[in-house]
Image 1 (cartoon, helix red, strand yellow):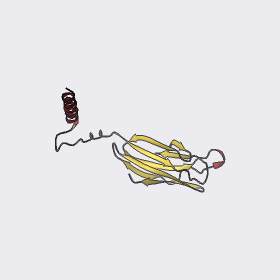
Image 2 (spheres, helix red, strand yellow; image 1 turned 120 degrees about the vertical axis):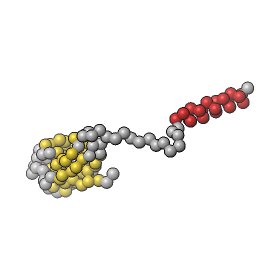
Image 3 (tube, one colour; image 1 turned 135 degrees about the horizontal axis):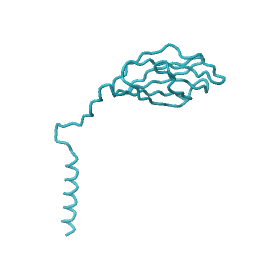
Image 4 (cartoon, helix red, strand yellow; image 1 turned 45 degrees about the horizontal axis):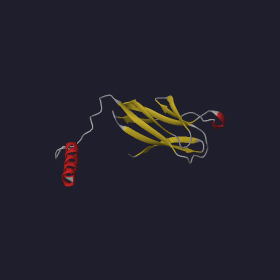
Length: 131
């Protein structure tokens, strides 16, 4: 009796697992991103900044976020060409001078791109990271 119960339990378990498996040669493919859908930009700042000043992130000449040392943010933005810049915040004793030269980025629909915010004495800039 115990032997039949164990056999039945094993059979039910294998059938449940077989129901989850895909037929041979079939792969799960993520859906294509919607045309003109948003993309995502991720910005991160390390803890090794020479000062504790915040950094302002600019997208298309508009401040969209502020990052302190060790902070990170992600932005869902419309796909297409974007202008990115970064600057040390003008608030407080930091007295930043505003954004430096902008970088042009082509963001695809559903694409995720990552950038490191690099801060050196008196300046800040963006460095693209490889995914």
